[in-house]
Image (cartoon, rainbow over all chains, first blue to last red; front, side, top):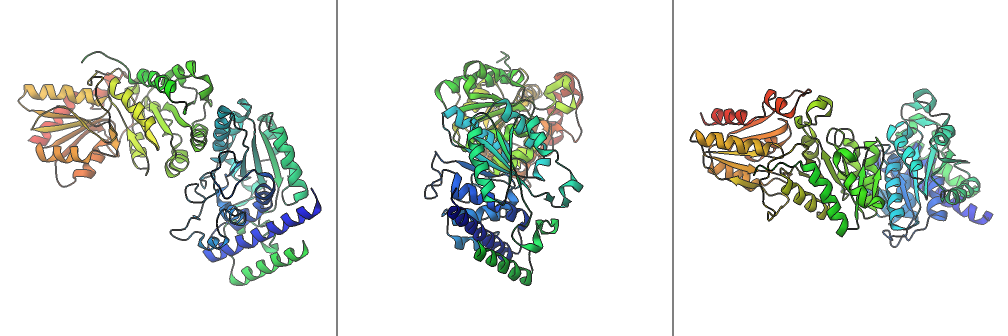
Length: 279
Length: 308
């Protein structure tokens, strides 16, 4: 991957972060922490690795992405808007009555959203169903499922993990947004998920790891995952920081669902703006 | 009239029948294919059958994923597990998302019998009726069951199908036309209307014969669609007969009795034969129907309460 492209992608990720902060500030509600931790992963998928036609959202051959941690909807919405699925201006309608952009994503409301999510733990099962359909039809589209690290405390995730390995399903790639923080506190104090790589290996998944904010690690990890997913299910454990990009939000459970004050909002935008200049 | 066939056997063979003409059908199971009779489908269409093991929540997601890519998944287990165990998954991934998934649950109600209260789903209709976008079917005999399965697959959208486990008398000829949302009058009568679904249709039919001997003419209505309801048939029953008595192998709350009351509240006298706010226990279906008040005699008794 040439450096110029990486720099472009970093700039896009930063613009997505700015839109996320703006849309949640305007909506006066929404989940900043988990949206900002997922942004670089979404950027790598939607702007580099996934086969898509934004002008034809229902194109049958497209790769599918399921945001199983539905509370990061603002990050998905901003990514889809920047990728051309709908006007960026529509991000202003987040969480407003009559909007396409409901508090948690719904696939029948928003172009580009592949599956409804919000109640946690559903997405990996749905991704598995989509790939079973792909296999039955002889279609090789890939399905990427983004899971929260708090989310994987849900038992259904492991039901799906067990089944995906049993069926030796191909082209199914899970990504854990491993930001180590959930609503009520840190993952280790609430419900530790470690040893996480061992857990997935014990479920017969191939495990890859990457820094979820470094595109020089994310992009090769995705390439490797795509290649290895020919043999069976692959998970990428992406180490991330909750609230990434805004210094005072980083690593704080508080910012799971808090809305910034006007002063905090201005500071957040100023920080993101500076980062845009640097990269 | 008295040839006895278990609806679940018909369910399995109907899936095979559909599979032969509809390549979109996909059957999903959670380690109960022998009991729900979907093993008949597996035997013929192995590539369109998946067994997810004992994981009903996962089964709902897998069915939703299959539907999202254009298959027509029929997922099947016991009613106590779907909707019982996976209501949240059904609510979000199927009903709210409005996906073309058919949830076909066998073994409903006290009719499960000796397995006891854990396996006797008496709240499934209440749960499924509460969800927007969900169509709720509870066919009675083998003919109706076959036609209901055919219609459910043909219909575009989420459907809950409650399929009986017990053997059931046959009321309908092969020529019957099943329509979602339509009630079927099995017997005319001007004194009282008896309405039931599933295994209780036989019970109200028997009650009508007992009532006839006592000089009371009962209209017998088979109501295989709990949602959308045949409101017209219910209003007619309210206007043309003196009272309505519903009967169901389900809790009194949230099922047919509730549905009928919602239509004719204030317009008609409605009484319900159902399980009254308590769990079941082990026993033969006949013993349980007697102990929990689901017999023809119980229906007759309610009719007398209503008319006197």
